Structures are given as C-alpha cells and as structure tokens.
Image (cartoon, rainbow, N blue to C red; front, side):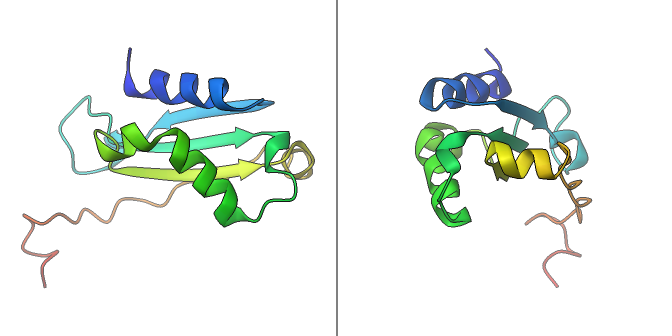
Length: 110
C-alpha cells in the first residue's frame, strides 16, 4: 500500500468524511523520483464543526502520527466542515512552488 493510500485509509477510519483527497506533491520538491514525502491533504468532515484550525490539525496529526514520524516530510492540511467546503465551491488553494532548499544546497545555507 502506498503512503497516500495509507493516509486516506487512516483518515476514513478515524472520522466520518464527506470528502478526502490525498495529493502526492513530492515531484514538486528536491527529492528522488517516485518519492512519497510531501502531501496535500484535504478533508471535509462534520467532526471539524466548532473546532479552531489548530484543533483540526491536531486531530489529523494524531491520526497520522506514524506517517509523520516516518516517511512524510511535509503535510499541507486543508480541513473544512461541509458548510465551509460548500461555501468555497470545493476549491482549495494551490500549494506554493518549492523553493528548492536543502541542507546540502549551498544556496540554502546562506
């Protein structure tokens, strides 16, 4: 099972979801081909109702603690209630371009 599939399965098992997408954005970063390290996760769930963004994020971090301690280097979270999702017409902001930095890149260490 891929990392993306494991993330989606764990989210679906942890809470009732109206919508969930897991996008592997690793190819947009300075990582080897076919990596599964950078993800964009969109979750729409009634369980987010009444919760501030930090509490929503903490709920997802708890569910994905194993992945965040291992293969996942970056996780962009877009978490909505069904009402918020509908108000956005199902649109999620695009992820920013990778700045290309790495500990091994001399330009990054300046």
